[in-house]
Length: 223
Image (cartoon, rainbow, N blue to C red; front, top):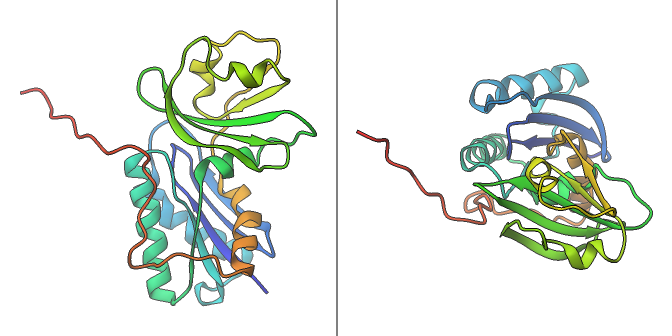
């Protein structure tokens, strides 16, 4: 048996799922605007465990979305995951946020580009083929009219995530498919985490840190 608790907090979606053998058996999330992670994450953890009638001690591993994404959101999710692993003596599994997001797109051919909104015209993005093999590293990039043109000229490109809104205002290609109003969810984490759990691909709980991609910059309030 493999029961995995998954936490996704990289964006405004506070999402918790419980999976068994890679299949989601309970899901609780709040994707409304504004970050509710600090208030709702542990509530959602308790609710999915109760719904599935699973005790904390019955969990085999904890999976967490590691980024990129919101600095604060990632800190909250990773801190919660590490705390659970310490308390329960369970392994920690980390999953790239953009890989989790890409799983929401099911295609037979073409390219999947999951993207998260960053500052101004910047997005965090990665590129996957139809079989979810990552073909380009995760990057922070400034969008312009020529962004992703080499892929758009070859066939359909499926854009998904919070970066879609700004992208569709700039990129005008008939092959561009914009999947709107989608955020990373713990619902897609179970299968990925299960594959890692089977081969013991886990993190060092003491030293694991989120993948921010860019350094956090604190802005001083105006006096």
